[in-house]
Length: 341
Image 1 (cartoon, rainbow, N blue to C red):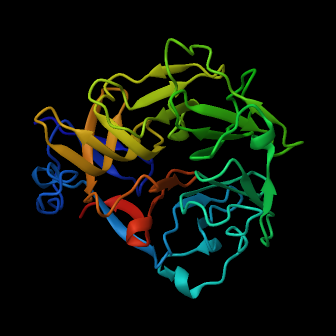
Image 2 (image 1 turned 90 degrees about the vertical axis):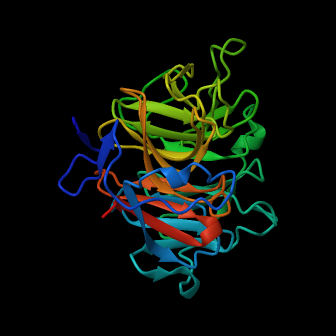
């Protein structure tokens, strides 16, 4: 049997993913009858989720600081970090943003928060509740409201945010900008000059009317290539797109039957996704799935029930690709993904 092993992280401590066969490892949880979990029982887990931070108070947004790789998380009570393995968030004082629930920021709105950290160390926080962002200085402290999305033509309630890397250059998108997205019928995108005057550029879709653009989650991979996901699972519509520097989307072949809430892209180009997937048999998988755009194959990572997961789950990867973290607000955990034993 030809076993194809891929190093998702591309280093000595990398995740080994078997594609095209059943890999040895821990058998998935039993079928509980949960419709979102019914297909998991027949799968073999190739990854293991190890509790990294506990009692997170429903923290959803997570990000790694570019300057030192430190992990931060945000919930409605504030921004926490740097976070280390074994931390209990309920025993920690916020690093900043203790005013997120005030009327000037997000009020009593959604607990669905996303986080991005700029090269200069600013913390940008978004919420699906509001056309407003919050900005925390590098040294911490109160969040300041950013209302540029309200006054611009973008009018976005942030569901996803990512920093544009070097070499991704276009008329509408520039390196170092904060790219903000909201999944709607036409999925709005905006680019914010966070390292400059904070001007907001609406990222238009040149193919509007021909191809709707996804923006439930955004992440860059090697190239760099910008990927976007569709959160709603559909059997005939691809769950992934790439977005070019001019803002135009292209569907990723083989990504039909996926509803993808968050993902990261490994050094080898494979996507580690918090997703649902309809199998051809009619069964549904739910949990962490690995998708290879190169050969359009999927590998089962870790299974979860729908009661344990939500659209607010977030994934983050370290700059060197060695560490992948995932927030699970329903379980009040942040986990680290490693090879299954």
